[in-house]
Amino acid sequence: MTIWRLVIPALLVAAAVAGCFSYLVTPQRAVNETAQRVPLTVLKAPGPGHDATGSRSIDPAVDEKAASAYWDAAQAILRRAPDARASADEPSAKEAIPLPKRRPIPRP
Image (tube, helix red, strand yellow):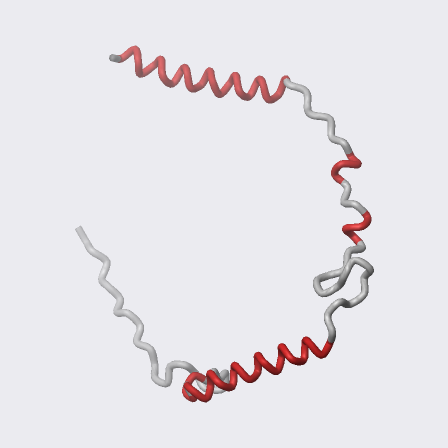
């Protein structure tokens, strides 16, 4: 029984030493510098809403229609719940929030 108390930690230490040794001794992989570079086409790629030629593919009228539909939906929600308006001018709690009482330190 007492022999296992020495064998198990010795095996764990031997495995850790072998792992460190194999990590330090094996040669590193050759890094291909061209494989890590970002292609030039990716750097010049336009953001969303552009096609492959770089021109804007979304008609501004479509954006205006989407914005007006969003605004109409927001107004419809606020008509159903008029108290749901958010206001930064008034605090959310109108009265003081009580803090918890301090507990005495338990003495042995």
